[in-house]
Length: 100
Image (cartoon, rainbow, N blue to C red; front, side, top):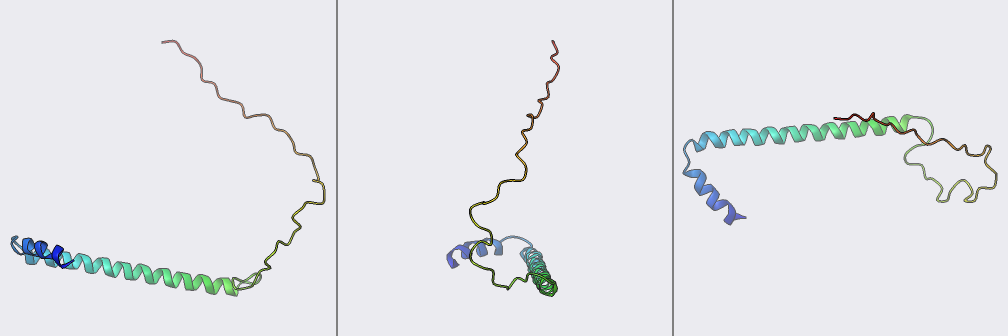
């Protein structure tokens, strides 16, 4: 990694206004780092709030152990209430034929 940065640092040292460019780059990187920290803290607080709301709601909780097996039998024992209705296929749209 050091071998990669040495030529780049040498080229940067020979360019005019390198101090000003480095200050701009430093402020840009600092702004990006601050933005990432703010976004991460926002996601963390949102996640904590959602967990608190979910735990306070009555009913099924996130941490409740659910049974391993299915609650309904795998084979359907009763017949369906109504037979399935066959629908007509969707009509196709036909564009008028125009001669040129």
